[in-house]
Image 1 (cartoon, rainbow, N blue to C red):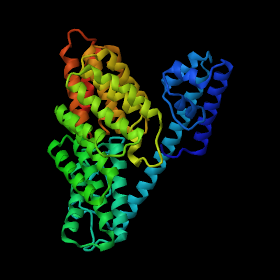
Image 2: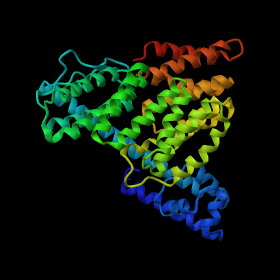
Image 3: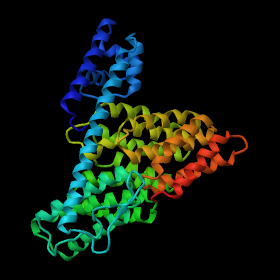
Length: 443
């Protein structure tokens, strides 16, 4: 887990102390309360010390078990609100800094040689002339300074994806990768930066593969994943190698190749990789998804182990991308397993949880998770709930360029409109309104 600001960390410790106070008042040991809540004693100890985050469900159950009268749940909700406010402030500052950098580049004349990338503005007005990462100017000879520039551009691409989606960024990132690939092949770089340059190429290929997935360019996904594995192994970058392997397992599942997805997950779980609890939870999630796709209902039992590992927290040696494994993702993956196994009713509660746990600042994720929720609501013909979700999705559809999300939404809308004679007219009208928005969407 990334280091929290002091105010948030103190709120978490205060919440943990309050939990311990209620537990002692109930004359329960940590082991006894952990047993009641189906947690490990070590995890409960970490929560009381403020060292480990825990989902809202934990605080709801703890509040009930300790007869806290809603105090624990209220304090937890206040902590979440404070954390979201902090994240929103960071996102705003990042946007300001990014715009300043864009203006600096434009003034300096560092742009594209073949035109610039355009993204729609959040207001839906005139497209913004975004800075030119694609077809980036590159020196004839790579040095340490340009290596640092590559890393900064990768961070910027990731930031833009989280905000606007990957459709516009996909081919751009591939062009950027080819630039580095060519320099490596030609040997036009300082010998001392070779390993770091290989690692940068591997990371960029991994990012390009993810963006191609969001852009629904499936052949490119496989190609870029292979490039990422090649370069990360040359660089000895185990962290990025693992991320690429989990991406490959995810992609195999998306292509309805559950055996391939399972093989990749099992290769990591049973191979020679040193996995922390958080990373093991990630690959067990991939295993559960693959088993569910194969029709195995025992896949749902794996989530007990996954959640236990997740609650053990992160370790100092965990890679920066370990943030991916959070309550939102766990809820979403369990929902996907349930839906795959035909239990759409149980899946909806998990999809709702994944939406609830997604920060409003993560616009692309909000769009994606609400799209899956709508699809589940369409399956069950939950008209009122679907109407509310449709209203939330419409403004996002004109702002986020995510082809895979748009494809999913079209399927959900087709389901809703297929029941036009049975569904309320307002739902059909709202679904058609979203369809019009999708026609204008930046995909």
